[in-house]
Length: 256
Image (cartoon, rainbow, N blue to C red; front, side):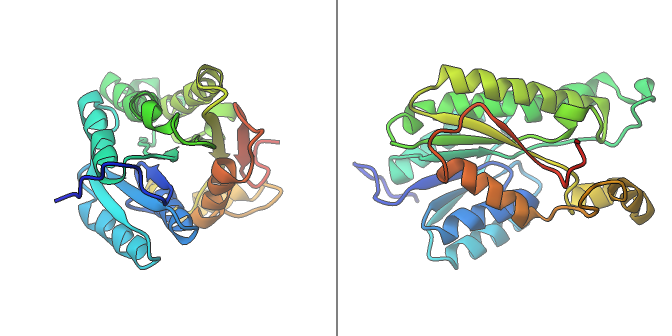
């Protein structure tokens, strides 16, 4: 059972959505190593992986809670924020990392059905909005509060796993700018836009030959690793106080 605190704890608290694996896990660990307590979120299927993340976070002397929540569902998001408030009474940083995709050739318009389109937008665009809306009342109480949206270079270039994925990340980029104005000056909102990341997503959807062809023309011709993206997320959350509404490309130069 979660302890009920009557007043906010002394340590800062970060919520990382989709933190069972990949960039989410690396981000949770990055914050834990820097003294944050961590909310580890997973949608359902990744319980075992989320428990691994939690064990690694706790090994960093951080406190953590594990929250199953589909970020596309408003009631579940509201309940997640209530659990955070019940445990710590505060929230300092939100990292909207949870995302989904399907690999569909862009020219295959018929291959991208309405259900896939809606599910991608529900998690990738609606999810960050719902999490931001629910967490705002806790964030606004903390000096230096920040939100970092994990977008994608696909939302800028229009090249990625599917048309729906690119469009959802393009919408997230615009959402980032809109929210940075709506929540100013108390809460900064920025987005990191990674290029191709060495992840289970990518290796499930592409062959080694396709990956090699993808990175070959890039100025830095390799995949990013999750820790490299986590470093930038941490910077946007804690390393600057005059940066808001920005989209920071971390893509090996593939967008230039």
